[in-house]
Amino acid sequence: MTITISNQSITAKISTHGAELISFQSEGIEFIWQADPEYWEWHSPILFPFIGRLKDNQYTYKGKNYSMPKHGFIRDCQFDILAMTNELVILTFSSNSETRKLYPFDFTLNVKYEIWGEGLRVHFNLKNTGEEKMIFALGSHPAFNVPLEDHLTFDDYYFSFLPSKCRTTIPLEEHFVNFDKRTLGQTNTYIGLCHDLFSNSSLIYETKGLNAFMIESEKSIHDITLVYKNFPYVALWSPYPNEANFVCIEPWYGMIDTTTSTGKLEDLLGMNHLASNERFETEYSIIIH
Image (cartoon, rainbow, N blue to C red; front, side, top):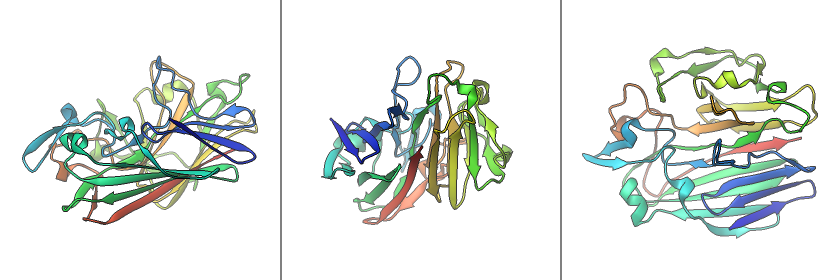
């Protein structure tokens, strides 16, 4: 089922399958990638309870092995509508016998999409409904069309950053992060877009506090800003070498598995812990012009 929310200037469409944002439009411009399966079959999937790929696509917890698909399973789950108005919708999903085969924790995840002005707020509310401490990662993977106008090209755009400062970058090696090889990334200036920028897959940065990542062009008045507070990591990604006209800005509460991973859930880098009956909340916003 597809849900539409809107105000006088912008319209967003959200699928109940995975609570995925599938369209965000203003002035006839579509800002969200339309999931061409030749390149990438998603629009803006939610990542839970893991981010990225695990070694051998599995992990262990309390001596038991569990299989886990890349980026977790929530993007393939059917959500229910909890509340809805013209400008917002809240979708909900709770653990069940099928999710427990992959992930031994009970939870409820509510996702709220709310339009405000020229922006869309995406709010996550995760509750641990089980009796033991829950270990999880949570993130988002929105893909934005680049270029936004037919007469422009991918290379006409660039990333800009606020605050304009260097951020620690974490390299990937064969799909996994090498945390010991962190370096300082040059996010204190513009980074021009080109497909070769993603020849080693994602650019992953550590972030603190309030951050804004922009996709802009000097040849257009239209741009995209993703803004958030306190997500510890963000990834920038576009497929390579199968080049496509979109770029992802991915805020993460969690991390891809490491090159030195033991596979034990308790030892995985960047995982979060939530006590029984406690809630974890976070949000980001997409602003378009």
